[in-house]
Image 1: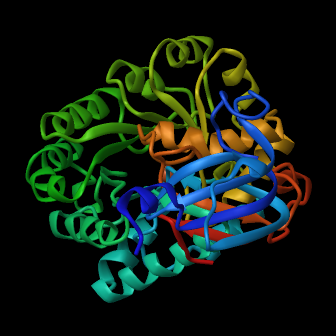
Image 2: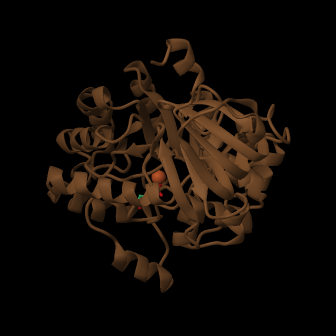
Length: 399
Ligand code: NIG
Ligand code: FE
């Protein structure tokens, strides 16, 4: 029989022969922000990491997994997606690739399709995109409502989302619902009143699309403040299509994240550097809208915490692939491969105000991605190649 003391010191799984392990703990390995350990091992007990370090010092265990001299990284934390929707927007994409600009107006197409869909269709869509994401190394994701825009349809979207993740965001303020086109103030009253009451039980976060054609700074402040009063924490779609008040409002309200950050003044960058709001960059959106890239280098040089996520949605960024976003960020946004990897893991965790994910250190959830590559650098070096060959989520091997 195994004594309790013995079982506590024995890992249930030991992953060995890891050529390069990203821990995101700068007290480990090479002491860089990635805390890179070579010839490493990771011990897992239940759903948690219990030990990590040089494999020659690894604890004994019966259940060993040989990583085959490949790289292990923390599972990606995709802190921004819009997965509860129906239909797609192929025509709009085609038109855009023939020169038409992106505008928030396309959201209406998806609102109509989403309202018309059954609960089962919406749930099946979420499951499908999550499966895609998992196969690309994502172990935590945030997702939002925002394609319902009625009390029932928003609450339904959040119920569907909450069946798959704890990181659920109420985005009733995505655009003004078509029914309220002549009465935006009436829609803001609905979003901050009856709709908020119906949605708050399913959500952790509240979000607003603060943009021309969506909601202005005063409306966004009112909506986020109402959410805060109901116990939801703010995050904002800010400064995506144009300069505007979103980023500074995010910092003012201590939002966990200002998302997009494509058009920033020096004052916006200073505000982000002075607060705890993470800048979440979503290069899939610039890729798919042929817009200019957000300047990650400028933010990093100013000391801003940067997250990288997919923004997966049928309009502006129909990708579930964090590796794709990492490659874009390195190629076109001035990030090094190390910075991009950190932002897609620890950065995403920071944008969700979590310390139990996005790192491979004792006490964190055992969320790990095994790459068919000798190091994480290959994610950007070999763009478009499916390098994810193993995934552990909460200690369980799921791929
Ligand atoms: O994050 N910016 C607002 N919302 C989404 C786009 C939604 C859509 O086009 O359907 C975004 O890019
Ligand atoms: Fe978005």
